[in-house]
Length: 55
Image 1 (cartoon, rainbow, N blue to C red):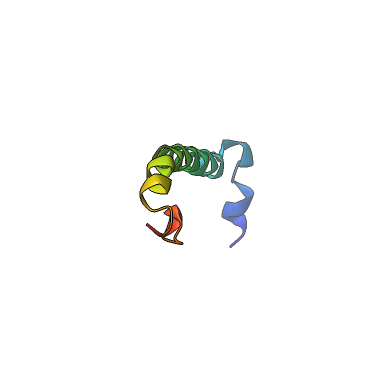
Image 2: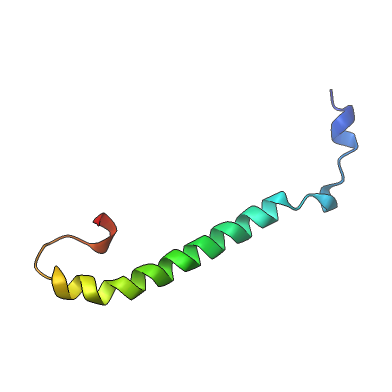
């Protein structure tokens, strides 16, 4: 069962690194998106007691 594991070349595996990059880009995009809507949200729902994360 471990014969295939011995043939894996760790330096050729890039999926883990690519996934991390994709997650970071998605988080950056979402952060920019939320920060763009935040001032309008605060103006409109200032006294609601809710946050933008619950919208």
